Image (cartoon, rainbow, N blue to C red; front, side, top):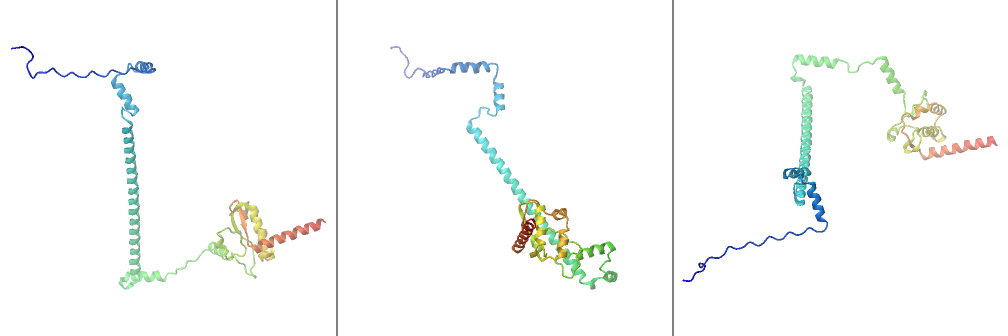
Length: 264
């Protein structure tokens, strides 16, 4: 019989040849040569270590972005947890304060109830209660305390016609608290110096519209400048009633006219 290859046997399939490497473009050859010379002494371990220190370690931009989003989400969750814990602590603190106030109020109510029911006291407690009730509730003051109270009682915001006036005291307080004072002006923030504003206020008080007596004018003009400005704020604006302001302007015009006539 004729020779030849047995039926059914074929040759092994051949692998396709690997693609040819693309030749480096113009200018890349020298750049690759510089990189090769620079890192010629660096092995794989050193390369991995340097990449790890730089934070890249061969990761892609997508991995770095995912890591940043994950860290941001963790930080946000931690902030929310801290905020919730602070809110919880505040609620618990308020509840504890309310509980203590209720307990204190309850103790006070019990004490009042016990005091209102002396029938439940024993004989010793009743005797002690009687001795406490018999003691005078007003203590006597010494001479210094009585003198201080007498000085306080001597101060008045609205002197009567028959009062004997000793001195005037400058007062700086909220305008609504001075509603009972006869001589008062309002100070608002402005550009005027407080010394000039204080003198202007005294001029308004001593003007004809203020209704001050000769003794009151004398005492107000006798106040020293440092006492006038001691309680005032800097850079103020004086707001006086329209009648007092008009009277002050009229008085100034009359004085200026009198000086002009005297010079003429």
